[in-house]
Each structure stands twice: as structure tokens, then as C-alpha cells.
Length: 427
Ligand code: GDP
Ligand code: IMO
Ligand code: MG
Image (cartoon, rainbow, N blue to C red):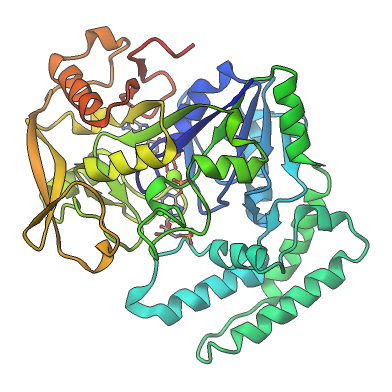
């Protein structure tokens, strides 16, 4: 069996958690391959909303294994908090959750370094979630990091103290930045003790054996393609490869073993944090999308920036990921519009562009829009795509033609049940 991948095609928060939860009954294993607690994946069912940061979104379904892969970075305190939140639901997470020994650990000093670095950047700040993601991946590539496997080593504390010492030296650079490590260290070490009670595995062997045994595996992306460290709007990106290729390095899956790639996007577009966003709306339309879509960060609560769908950016994301099918999310958020706008290309310095130029951050990018007739009715009660209004079907068909990939799922509300199969791929 091959590994299917589900990942975001925009700037994150496309609704990955919801669709992974919907698709989980079709799979034996759900695996996160990159990112960390900067992610906030929301699942809604039976009137309850759950937000996951590190735990894969298959955790609520019985009989499915959830793997935190080697490409993920783990903050043990946040991870423990997520596990605690599962307690009231009697989820036997110890039997459903395994962690790669090669996943890196976020230390309290990584978080402090993240905050110090962002503060020093002033108005040029990335808008990081301040979860220590950048400094942790820096230590990983700098070959200084601590990994989950290290917590079982007798000299773990020596390794920890040596890394903290190094971080303290680095923090001296930020003269005006004050911090208090003492309050953070105790809970972190306590959470490490809890982490030792979970199952840590050689995840690359686990996943390859599972494939040989014919198990069905879905890799769950975090963030989105436009936040990818290589292909996103650098430097306003996260520090991992959020694209399909990240599945290979983040799980130990060979490129020849990638199956379907499900790209997921909102019927419009959002971004949280700084950086270019050509179709951003600074008017009451943007405000309406934010309000109707409840566009506030699942991790930080920050209001998300809102705008119309951006086809050049989406085409780029589809190309980089090799998306084989698409899920369009939050169609219902556009219920109240007579007209929907679609950005087909940009004008930069009088020239037409149908892709994101290299120095987009420093350029005056003018989006050019095509107007599409809206459905202007309530989609949230729909139970079949066949019953969808013609205008919605026309919008979906228009996007399929432009993007050259089928839209197999259309989501019309946050709940599990508010999910319509266009091409009958859902269970
Ligand atoms: P993720 O990071 O990609 O998993 O997405 P988030 O959970 O950060 O943000 C998506 C938000 O939209 C969450 O609040 C979801 O509950 C919600 N959501 C997902 N699909 C839909 C949909 O089709 N309609 C509406 N109205 N909300 C949705
Ligand atoms: P999910 O998985 C949306 C953004 C931050 C910031 C930039 C770098 O829920 O889609 P970082 O904390 O990684 O240093 O932040 O990336 N960002 C996200 N935006 N959804 C996410 O995850 C994000 N994770 C990071 O806002 O602009
Ligand atoms: Mg999110």
C-alpha cells in the first residue's frame, strides 16, 4: 500500500483537521509528518469542538493508530495538555498513539529564543505563534537538538543542561530581553516524565512494515504550502517542509510510495501572521468573511487576515505537491454573497503575472479578479452534493477547469456531517 497525503494549499487553517477526521474511517494509521504545536487542527462532531496541536486528527476514531512522525517537533507540556483534554472522552490514547524516537523536542528555552528573536525583529516580525518552532528546527539542522529517544538515556539531563546553557549564551545577544526560565523548567521536566510512558518507536520501520502488511495510511500535513520553508513566502513562513516531499523526510516514506495527494483549500483565502497576501481585503467584505467564517486562530486566537481565492498561488501549490484531488472548505461562509471574486492573475509594474514572483514580499502586487455569481443561500443543511445550488456547482467546475484537478469534497460547515462528496470518494 502507498501513503496518501492530505495537506493545506494556502497559508494554513484550511480545515485539515476536519477532513482528516472525516477520512479516518478509511485508514488504519494517521501520521503527522512535520510542524508542531504551531498547528491548531479543529474537529467538530456530536456538538463538541476539539482542537489538536500535535496529536494526529485520527485520535477520536477507535481502531486507528496515530503516529507523531520524526519530522514533527514536540513541546511535552503542550502535548500533555492535549492528552489531558482527551480524558473526559475516555479515549484510550495510550493504545492509539505512538511517537517517533527521532522527533525533536521543543525546550522552554526554544520558546524564549523564539520570543526574543521576534521582539528583536520589530515591525519585520514573522508573526510566529511563539511556540519555539524556528529555534527547534534550527537546532535540528544545526545538529544540536534533543530527540524523543534521548529521554530514555541515562545522561538525558546532561544533554538538556548543555543545550540550555548554549541557549542562555544566545539569549545574551538580546540585551533588553528579559525572561524567567525557572517557572517553565519544572512543568517541562514533569511532562518529559509523562512522555516516557507513551510508546516511542522507530517510526520509519513502523510505517514501512505497516505498508508491507497492506495497512492504509494517511499523512496529515500541518500549516500550508505557502508557509513551506522552501516554497512559501519566505521569510514569512514556518521552519519545515509542509509539502508532499515533507512526508518522505518526515516519516521515512520513499517518494515512490506516495499515493493520492489531497490538497485542501478554502473557498476564499486567509492568512495569520505577517507576509504577502495579494488578495487580502481590508474592507467590510474581509470583515464579513472573518465574522461568518469565524476566522480566528485555533492556536493563538489572533484574527486571521481574509481575502478572495488566489488561483496563481493555488496552481503553484498544486504543482509543488502533485495534488491528485482537492477538497474545497468553508463554502458556506460565502452563503451571503451575490458575487464571489476569484483572482486569476496579478499585475506587477504593469506586467501580467500568473505566478508568485520571487520577490513578492517587496513588490506592489495588484490582483486581477473575475466575478462569479454566488449561490446566495444557506448551504449548511445540504446532505448531498447533487442537491447543491447550480451556482455552487458552477463555481466548483470553474475551479476544476482552472486548476486542472478534480474537487472531490466540498465542505459546508464545521461538523463532520457537513461534508459533501462530489465524486463519491468518501466512505
Ligand atoms: P486546520 O488547521 O487546517 O485544521 O484548520 P483550523 O482548525 O485551524 O481552522 C479551520 C476552522 O474552520 C475551524 O474552526 C473549523 O471548525 C472550521 N471549519 C472547517 N470546515 C468548515 C466549513 O466547511 N465551514 C465552516 N463554516 N467552518 C469550517
Ligand atoms: P495549521 O496546521 C496558520 C504561521 C504563523 C506565522 C508563521 C510562522 O493550524 O494550519 P511559526 O510559529 O511556525 O514560527 O509561525 O506561520 N503559522 C500558521 N498559520 N496555520 C498554522 O497551522 C500555522 N502554523 C504557523 O502565524 O505567520
Ligand atoms: Mg489551524
